[in-house]
Length: 470
Ligand code: GLU
Image 1 (cartoon, rainbow, N blue to C red):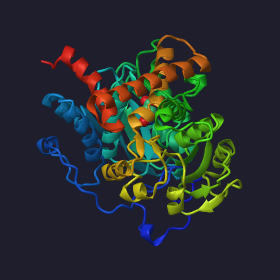
Image 2 (image 1 turned 180 degrees about the vertical axis):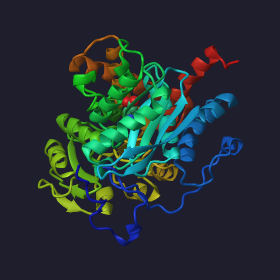
Image 3 (image 1 turned 120 degrees about the vertical axis):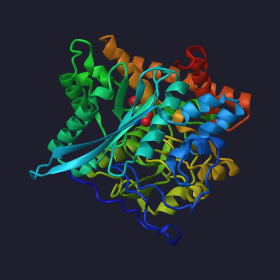
Image 4 (image 1 turned 45 degrees about the vertical axis):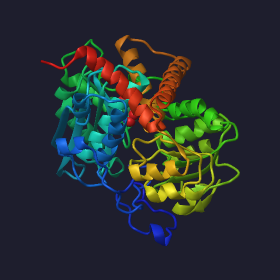
């Protein structure tokens, strides 16, 4: 498969000239590098558990938001320490034959954060710059997300350190199948159920399901339920591909009225135009909203009269990015962030909205389509500026919710129609939004802390009846 060009931010103003820390996956710009060195987020639990002391450490930053909620709701100490670390951290190294006849060694991960509410659940990221702490953060977020949105799963996440766009289809198939073999005894339809994430897709899920079925001895018991996000022809669910974007839109429909924004005619911008960004753009446009600006790893574009999200999605499928799209003009990175919109949707990688971006944003609401896109320092700036943040564990929970429906369909040998999938998804999203609003009232806090508090309440309830073994 052709490799998209390296991130080429259009023009970069002097203030943003520092090279990006990490290259973005297809559809996602490189992680932000501006904002200076943030302060180290502190909590006694970090010292007790010997957390990394790098202020940029994603895991420390992510867990700090949960601990803020745990503190205001007086969560017992033992639950804080249990939830601050994953149960299992699995790392595998495996050799794969390349097309040139040489073997290359790859590194893969599966982190199983918590299974108090059900089997571990979460995606597999295929990215050249994925590290254990990233995977730990994402697994932790899955525990919180599943709890908040009311699906009977715990949290997990995995990945392979690989750039999927730099390998032929044959190489990718061998990499994915060999990785599956390396972790096959650690996953299972009732134990740990992976899914797609950044850089992985339905074809990869099909190879994983097929390899697992081949290796496992559970023939006849729906071994394909070991993974979700599969092609519809092989046990996938209708509506799964667009599910995360659909969930972002369902959340906005639920939350915007109280912020005084009408979705019809509302203006929005999107950072990252991969699966989440492009589906959010298309569905929002179909609901009468107008996409004004988009930025991905190939550059940034803007059109005040509106960018056709459907046409842009087709353009990206053909060319690999938003650059060169005829229906909009090119702008630079700073202009993108400064574009006046009602809603800004970060739908790329983690830690992209640091202090610098937060100061530039010209919006009323940030709807987090990506996992952990806002750093604690970025969040403080947004809060001080009165910008409402719809937190990722609520906003992007549509993907895992429809994964749950896929798993149920596999287990019960059913195929739901799209209308049923969308209706059930909407129920979960509306319920979760309500729980977040209720928690905000109860604890008098911002929406992120409220979302964590609502997720923690459910975890606390299950621990209080299960208690701890032995
Ligand atoms: N990777 C997606 C997420 O971060 C989906 C996970 C799943 O479907 O299990 O929510």
